[in-house]
Length: 501
Image (cartoon, rainbow, N blue to C red; front, side):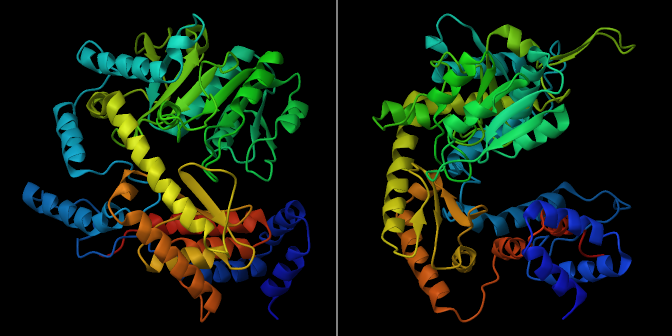
């Protein structure tokens, strides 16, 4: 037995924290480190490809002479055409939320008209602030802003849900003014909260969720202390698609005099319309007096261009803590509302155009179609006896198994052209249903292919090696978090390698 195999078997018997510390120590021993590096390379042989399989030339250095526009456009079109099959037919979880050709062409035309605009230079492009202010106002109105008890609901655009969450955590930290601030979030909360904690100096309390995947209110109450600046919940959580008890959590935060953030990045453009359609969904927005901030991604179910999100606040004073203002810089007076200085005006214009093009009627219709397709998919999963659905989801449906390797099922689905999301703790897979899945026959195909994939996994006959499933399987065999991180970091290194000459 190799030294690496012996070490791995020893680590498997230890608690994960201790195993991680021992792994870090082992990596300082040159022979062990070299042996582990070789094992990582062997495991990555079956990882997803780092670059597209294409005849398009790779460039490690700038070309000596300029290439023609026609050649460049031809290469880009070739790559886009090769990748389109992966999402146009509705076989991807999330990723592309609208995808209709007419809608895409419309947003592309809007972007082209504002490709050079930058809201940082408001004197040159005041239209950028018109678009942004109206996007924020429309989104706030959709999420309880008109019923917020007289409080102004304000906000800004950001580059995505991660930036929205980081900005909200900064605002709550700065308003609280607490040394060594703390945040209390469920274990299912998005990893953007981890980034925020790391960047902003928070201590993070991750609260275990219940068997239904929802945040534990009682455990959250116990975690709130004198250093708590903010509590958060998800509507819904990305992993399992279940909505945390936002009314109870936000009221708890209010009673303790701390902020509460609703992460509605995934659900903010679905839940309001599901409520209008008569679905039994909880209130998650500013109608709840304890909610002090909320994030919602326009580039998901808002059907706007990729790279836009909205972060909202109860009151201008809290939003001021998001801003950065410089008054003594030799470069002049400076402000930026979020992380970025320069921002792409074309994306902001495209977001404004998407909201207007959809309107209330469009969002209602889209939500109705998505929830109907999701209900069909959920019912089909429930008919497969080897699978169990986690919690009580509406349109982001996670499933696991006690009898079959769920990552093997994920890989078998990959062989059939389905790109699904792998989950950890517990091992599971989810599908985020979008308008792509409302196309005729797609939900039925998913259920049929899932049944066949489960049957193939039960029958055995060798492991499938498709998509990201092998990475999840590899990670599951590593007991130390440090080893898993090492493996992922090496895979990300591969993504940055340039193939070809």
